Length: 147
Image 1 (cartoon, rainbow, N blue to C red):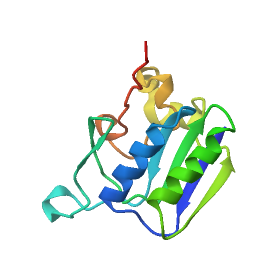
Image 2: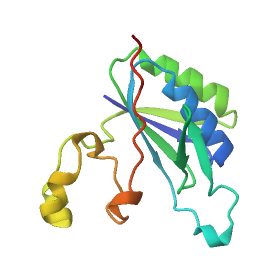
Image 3: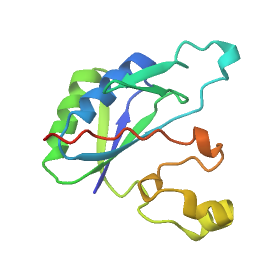
Image 4: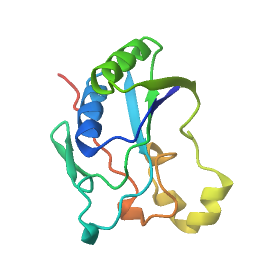
C-alpha cells in the first residue's frame, strides 16, 4: 500500500530533512520517494541544493520537495505518518492512500534501459527518474535491523 503526502507548498531543504527523518522513524514505512521540480545546477548556488542527513546518511537533495510517496506495510502506519506531517508541515498537507510507486519493471523500462534493465535492483523499481543518469537517480538508505 502506498501513501502520497501532498504539502500545500513546496518544502525547503530543512523541512524536507526533518520530515524524512521523522518518517524514517515509523515502523511500517518500507520506501520513500521525494518528488518535485529539479533544483538549479550547483553553479547557481541555490540554498536548497545541498546535502541533507537522513538517519546519519548524507543525501544530495536535487529537487524542491513537492510531494513524498511512501510504501507502507500496514494501515496502522497511516496515523503515524499524519502525526509526523502535522509536526513538520504547519501550513497544511493532504494524505492520499492508493498506488503511487510501481512495483515491477515495465515495457517502457525495457525500451529505456535495454540490456541495462537487469542492472536495476528490484528495490529501485518505481523510484528512479528515467531522464537522469543511473548514478544520480536514487539514494537507498538501508534500515538497520535491530538485533
